[in-house]
Length: 447
Image (cartoon, rainbow, N blue to C red; front, top):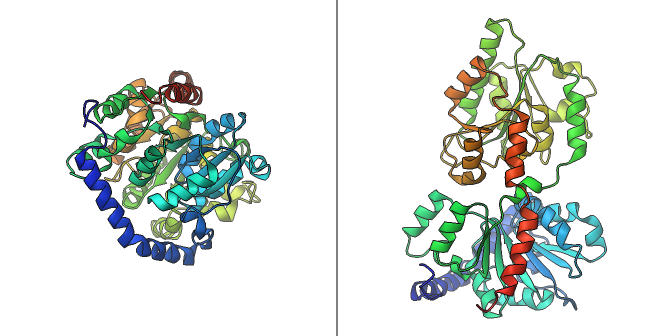
């Protein structure tokens, strides 16, 4: 599809018909899925009526922002903060309880005053979405990152609700895969009233998919709030660790990467010991909480001197017994929501995901803290800002063997804080650019 192809095309109409039929058949299975998840996390099955779009009617028009989960609502936080300064209240929608809780945690005053409502996104079929629209009367909608829900897009178009994609990117891997499919999200993208993307490379992709209104706004994650108590706690703890000991944080290590990551630690520490140098302290943060116990067992089996964050740090990230940390090989980060603490401690960040086919996790957090960062070979999930960061020399793409060689033969901080600061200055301002784009898009409605 391109800008000369009318939307929706026959292909899209057929896809939407099949999509509606799939929802009709699969809705009981989705409810069963939520029930099963709810047996482990009761919040999954709470507020079930919201999944069907049921809410009390509001008198005022709302600005609607959809942030499916935790990462998306955090990246949207600066934008929400700015939108709250205007007269219209905001409704945020989420699929996961974590996303909903985070919205309420970030904006407690706005929630208490009724200026922000966090709820679950309706199931993606017209009846549920129309009930949601009737309750909140959205002036326009903002979808964070890349959520292409056919029902959401087409129901919005049907009632004349402008729906915009924010902070968007379409990865090379995803685009190639979707363009080979007869039915895919690539066919529905043109249904957005406007798209705000991270780079010119991304803008060209969305234009080629038939999107008429495209704006380049950069990466909003660079502006997400940094929890200062975590930074303060990291600085205090760093003073308890011998100054000559380098600290390396392995962040968001996923299943399939542990064996190689632990081999890296072994080889690096053996090298430093042989050369009678202070061994690095490794901070190891698994991606998912359900992996904490398994990774703990793997580390123990390797014979490392290690401790978990939950056993050596209190709720305020303070060590009751600092001497238990100073001589560790590994500090295992078995907690959620404290990544800025783990990253602030380090001299070098290694971000996981890219050492296996799943693709790298985001590098905005370490760069925001002015930490040099290394990712694995598979960076297709974070083309922006990875490609730009690599070109600027503030990020390296390597496998674990190459990282071992780098750490053992070169300084950990392979770039200066000034270089990272310059990179951030070049790619910041996403919130302001997004607000300008929204205003322009709203002025173009009907064109």
